[in-house]
Length: 118
Length: 113
Image (cartoon, rainbow over all chains, first blue to last red):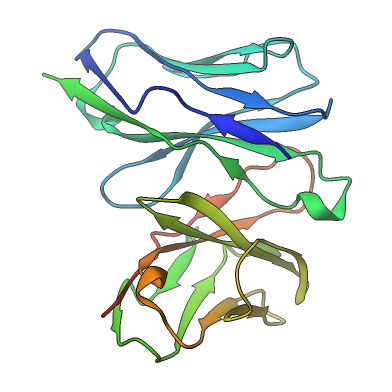
């Protein structure tokens, strides 16, 4: 069974600085997808960035980028130029390749609370 | 474009009662998934529906059930509520195909007293 681990329950960063959130996962599969979701106090889970395992190039979305290390099973999220609106819980999630009927689910890490200091 | 709509936003029920939660996916999204979020257990997968068929179910007792209608709207039902069922229930919809992420609703906060 796949597992996702986020070892940092809470992180804080000064506004405009850069912060990196860690995520490791365990799987025996070769094809899968990884996601970072943000959950602000409004409760809605918002997709930040996604990565296909078969792609070696790290995904980037504006100020958000990932460092995907497939061999190390590591998927960290880097937030550049942190803004007050980035404060939220951040969850790392794993999904198997959709070729198998049993794989239509996300497996989640425990989350990291990100605090932005003004 | 309307997002994923979950109703109601808040719900308070008594132990032993049953409850039905509703989820309307983004137009064109035919896959709907449900997740339970609690402080102790985190996010756990309940079930996923596509074209009115349950394709996958998480490790929850039979008191938890769901269905999907022809318009892709989905409902989940919890019977004989227990205190431990108090949680945020999140619904997500997705286009079918590899690589797509899920779009989530704002959830239903269920409190069992």
